[in-house]
Image 1 (cartoon, helix red, strand yellow):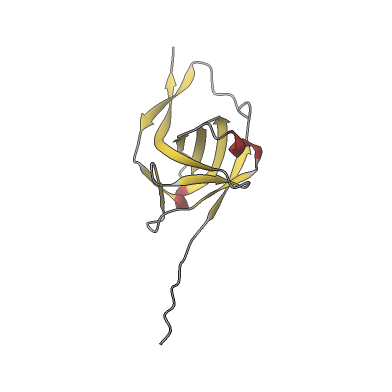
Image 2 (cartoon, rainbow, N blue to C red):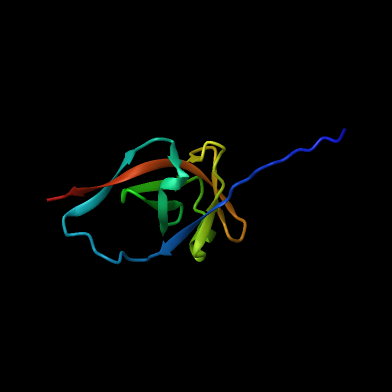
Length: 123
């Protein structure tokens, strides 16, 4: 009798928009504030991503909310490509301190935490 092991690994490609400046400027007097959120996010809810600075990936969710993924390191190589890959857990989520973002060149960056971005008026 032969034994067979089957492994299933799902890799999700996330399209990015590399912007040095926003396409639409926020109205004057508006700043984005971070508020802590769940340590896990459903991969199926991610629509797009944007690299705003080293060590940070902003995720545009299907419901149009913005979630910021902070990375353990600057991960400069991520910003050079038009996409990156996520390998979600069996639960279909990406989680801080468990999962990584992988560049097309193979560099891995661990997610250290997630924050919701909310607009706040400064005036």
